[in-house]
Length: 300
Image (cartoon, rainbow, N blue to C red; front, side, top):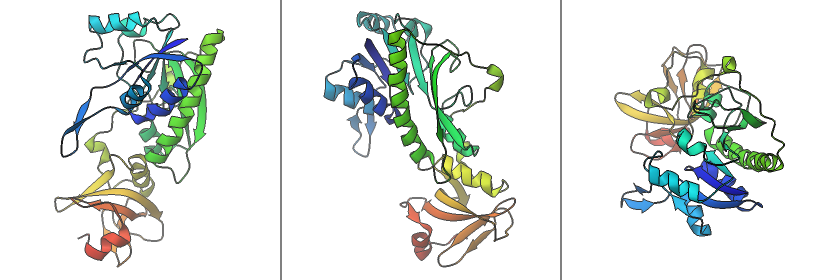
């Protein structure tokens, strides 16, 4: 089978590599635009384009997914299947092109966590389990009939970074299994139950702001779900502090937002218990352990 692979972030890279190393042929890659990054504003490729260029795979980077010339280019590749991983919302004119369909790899156990940030919200909400789902695209986002679904436990020590990487690898395995089913003609799809759907909206700055009136568990899970990027934060006297790692302290009773600190420890009160700050980044400085932070700083 000939494949067009559509993706942008590094979450999709193990999947792209798995398909490339399989018996299937990637005839083109569709990815995001090149961007200027860093102080020198050097042009850099998406991780997906970088890999495709190295392997000699044709790359398309459309600005407008409904552009007629882009759609005609796609048709010329005569792909059997389009694979979509963490890409933009495709119009029907695009996902209806391949004869065997277009399927998406989504980072949740659909219909739970439809939206842009399923991995983050599973952690923020304190879930103990998540997974990946492949489904055929329909016009309404993340609502298509499901092909395969595989679960993964969320460990207490997981944060967004660790869970993202584990799910990325799991997703690459599920994509190959999905392709095998499609090729064999043995796909049995399952319709999503819209009544069980829950949203996973894009992470905003407002999402990242810590509310000390919440429970210690809620604050701890927010930090986990946003670490290492974009990171939960709080402000003191207009100074910005990102928080990367915390623990719940049930022994120390403080008022919400009240700070306790020694030479080696800093904690903040929540609605019920307290939160130990374990890794922090003051504005304009590097990320550091709380011990390193307290050698030169103080939370007033």
